[in-house]
Structure formats: structure tokens, C-alpha cells
Length: 550
View 1: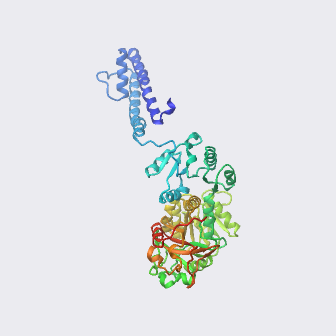
View 2: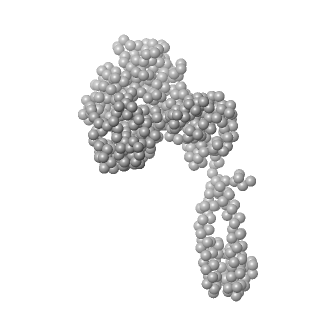
């Protein structure tokens, strides 16, 4: 029966049950002491009264004089014991009990799962997906085993079920009716979740986020629809930004086709783009590149039209063919550095970055606080002595692959102060911290949540989107009202705040449009804008979002 009580209830019951025993023991000792040491015997109930008064620190009345040292010692010990119990009683036993009685109880069984997405274990990797599901109003349930995190999620308005599937497999009863499942636990727990869900009859899409790519095949064999390793995709994207020898494409990073890319690069003060208006630069006509917006002081500003001015020191966000983007990036950052690529942090992501860079023929210098094989400089990247030993002033770029976002922000500020023009690429855990990295001086920052969220959203929702900033997206839409019009001459940006950046026609993707180019009825357009801008585009041009399969 006691197994059904909460921990605080059990502790309170044990305390209340033990108090009479303590009073009986102390009262009996007192009664014997008064009889044989003091020579003034006390009756049983008088002795019990003394013990209760002393334990509760309420006083003794007239019985407050003792002659024998052992009796004085007994009284002193009992007084301190009573004081200790009094201090301990309320915060440790009473208050937790009442908090648990009055706080909202977390559900321990799944609700009706029709049309819902179940996410097993919350974390940075699924943070963007959770936000996206909420935005498109797809109901979701989060299965979490940590009570504190579960309550925090519940306070944020999410439906949460708490429990451990390895101890309570019945937690997943009813899962067979869910729309889709996503598991984000460690690989062993992922495997258990997959097997239990399939055993209970779930036949839909089941996606898993794995820590080790070697486990992907095994998870797929036991029932996963697809298995992804976001940390490795993130490492590939960061490595590609640090080296020109690597393709900027990373599997799952975006869906604009092999010929189209999105880049973010800092505009140096010496750049011919600095402090110029888009209308004067004519980036589309001259370079075949569409400027989406710019990061400035940690805030993303969407390009509003020809009058938008490119700020010196801002981070420009642009879309176009890869060759065109490289030319524009050279204009924005006309500094050609030679030297090794410094990688700070040698965890899972850092190791993968170094592996990819070495495979591409790049030389690397690895900094980490823990010595080990592959670490070239042991030290803290926040210290200038470490940067000097790593010869940061001779590097071609630095990649921050630190496990903590707060450490990453601080390190970005330190590195930027030490080497103002050095290309600085940073790994982020939570997408909400990308802006802080840019404000601290990073030239490019990408979070595992952005990577995983985009991959999962693509498979669950059929979306092809690049998440540049929490409010900015690329989406595939039907031609609609743009049929017969030129992508850059229909006033799309002026009317909706969005922009057409590419046109997919059969197997071809166009990113440059001549004067005679016109949108055809079967074309698919890649449109960039805020969520509001995209919705307005759909209304103004009578279009519809397209799945990749359609």
C-alpha cells in the first residue's frame, strides 16, 4: 500500500510514527534518571510530559532543576534534538507534503491520441519542432520522465504525461491512434520506445533522433521509420562554413535543390557593399542573389526593398546559386586568410567537425580543457594565453563547438575582441540563443534545434523550409496568381513583405530570371518571409503551400 504514496507523504508518515517512539524513549530515560540519579522519582506520565515539552521546545513549568551532571547532559542533548527536529519538521516534511497535495497533478496516462503527435523526451533538439507544431496548430503530447521539466512544460501550456516507459510500459497505451511519434531519448531508451510502440499496434511515422549513426540501422530494423543524427548534420554545416573545400550543402539542411543555397556572412567595413542601398547595388540583376535581410546588434531585420541599406558589420543573409553566393561573400568579406582552422571544443560535434575538415584536406588546431588524443592545445579558450598558444592570429577561421550556449556567447566575445576580422563560426544548442551569438560577434551560428526541427518538420509536415530566424522561413508554394508574371517584377515584396527566391520547373531550379522569364502554371515557387508575410502572400496571390511529394 505504501508504494502508492508520494515520497513526501511517506516521509511525513514515518516522522509522525517515529515521534511517539522518541518521546517514549526519552521519557523512560528521564524517569530512570530522576529516580536513580536525582533521587526524586517522577511518574510515567510526568516523564512523558517532560519529553514532549523538551522536544517541542515549549518549556518545563516547575520541573526545571537537576543536580546530577548526567541529567543535565540528557536535558541539553534533548533540547538540541528538539531544536533540530523543529527546524527540520516544516521545510522538509510538512511543506513538501502540502505542496504536493495542492499542486496540479501531472497526468500519467496518455490522453486520446487521435491526430496528436507524441514526442518522447523534451530537449533542445526538439524545441524548434515543438514550436512549429504549435504554430501550425497540430496538437502534441510530450512524454517526459523528469517531473520538474514536465511541470515546467505544463506551465508553458503543453500537454505533458510523466513517467518512465522502462518501468511502466502501459504509459503508451493508446499510442496506436497517434498521428506520428518522435523519440529524443538516449539510444537505448529510443529502442525500447520504438519496440513498445510497434508492439502496441502503432503503424504510422516513427522518427528517432540518435546519438550514434552506427545505431541507425538497428533502430530502423526494430521499427523506426527514419533515424537522424542532428549533431552530425550540425557538424557538417559548421565545417562547410569554415572551409571552402566542403560543399555548403548538408543533408536535411534545406530543400531548395542542389543548385540553390543560403548563406550568412559578415559585411566588413572595407567591403564595397557596406552602407549601400539594395536599389543601388542591384544584387539580383548583377549577381543573381536575393538579399533576405541582415543581422545587426543581435536582431534580424528583413529587407524591405530597394531603400534597405546594408550596414557595415552586419551579417547579410542571402539566397542564390552557390557560385553567385561565393562571389558576393568575397565582396562582403574581402579578407583572404591562410592558415589552420581552430576548433574549440572536442566533444561529439567538435570531433565530427575536425574529422570532416581533415577529410577535406584542411589543417586544424584543436583546443579543449581536457587533454586527450586529438587535442593540440589544452586550455580555456576564454584566456588569451590559450589563444596565443593556438596561434589564433594565424588561423583562417575559428569554430566554437562548445557544449554550453553561455560559454559559447562569452567565447565569441573573447575571440572577436582578440581577432576582429577572423571568421567566427559557432555551434548553438537552442535556436533562441542564435541572436546572442551574433550580438557577441559570431559570423555564423546554427543550433541543433534548427537542424533537427527542420528535418523532423520536413518528414512530419512535408515542409521544405530554411529556418533563418525563429520568425523567418522559406516555403514551397504553387504558382497561383503569379502565373504569367515575372518573379521580381510583380511587387511581391512591396505587397506582402515576402520574396520569391527560386522557381522549380520540373527537374530544374531557376534562381536567375531574365527579362522574358515568366512563371508557368505548374511551377513551384520558393518564397521567403515571416510567418505573417507568407500567409499574406498566400492571400494576395491566391496560392497554396506545396508538399515536396506534390
